[in-house]
Length: 110
Image (cartoon, rainbow, N blue to C red; front, side, top):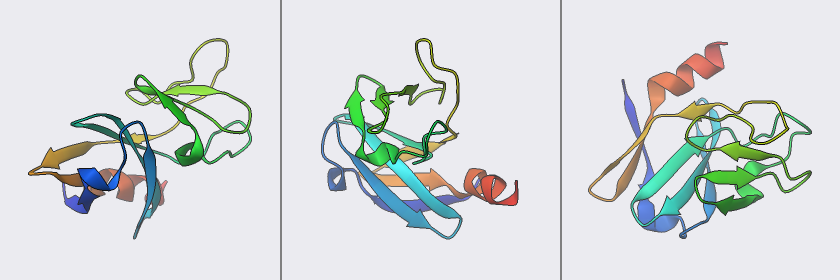
């Protein structure tokens, strides 16, 4: 794995999100707890809604366009909806958020 520094955890408000631009494309970061952040696709598979502008609740995000809900742990749609968003490995090192660049590269190659 090659890890990409995408910022400090305090750059993301609690229960908030940020969109980061990488060489392999944009990734949404969702902060669900004081020391917990998830990385996932910013695009809802339903109508392309910007998930980084959605509502974060628990370890889920709700699309701002049509209220589809996705698990930030698995990327799976919740409830009666069917769909999936790509999630990416992310780790926290001394307050810095490190995103798995190899996983992003696989997305770009697909």
